Length: 235
Image (tube, rainbow, N blue to C red; front, side, top):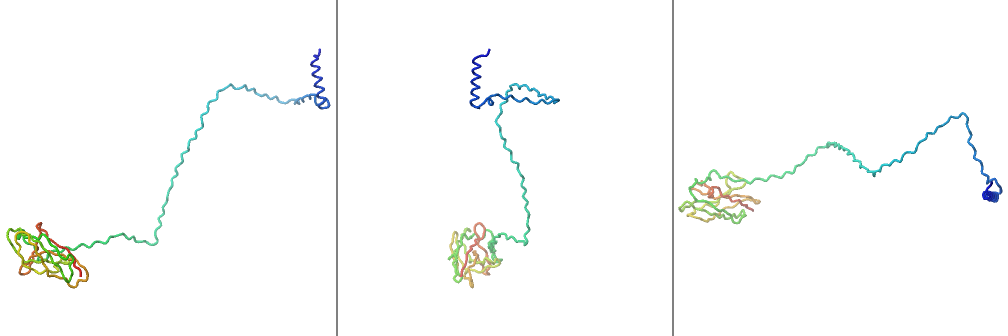
């Protein structure tokens, strides 16, 4: 027996379809087309894959980028020597040698007193003015020291040498006889000039004793050395 509610529901659906589409074509369900059966077609078996078991995936670590070390590249520098077309002489900086100052040596006739005889020494020698004029000369001041134990006296003078001539003396002051008592004596000597001097020139001086034939002996210092005075004469 048909359910009245079912009959009513179908009727409402039918009326609704007729009202909307104007007929029953749109509301009649279309039967689905059946697939065409191909005879003698091979049977394809689809393998059945069971669901994979629930696996716990590993925890992925953060990606770390490792810096790539730069590869050192060897650089070879090739230096090609290019010969100079014209050899250039290299001038070395050479300082001009300083001309050594000539040291006058005693003349053959100016010998030292025998050791210990006499014991009269020269301890100081100077000239005034310190730069004498050639035409005027200057005054030499000499300090003698008599250690002989007795009063003595000598004929003495100041012997002058050119610094560029070591063979013989240039000149001599006026010789004089002077007493030299025990102790210290301060004496002076003059009477010399330089003729024809065109520019300033260097000279040396020392004190000598003389005999009647002008044989000369050099007064020495207490330490046995000769006392030389270097000075300059100008025109």
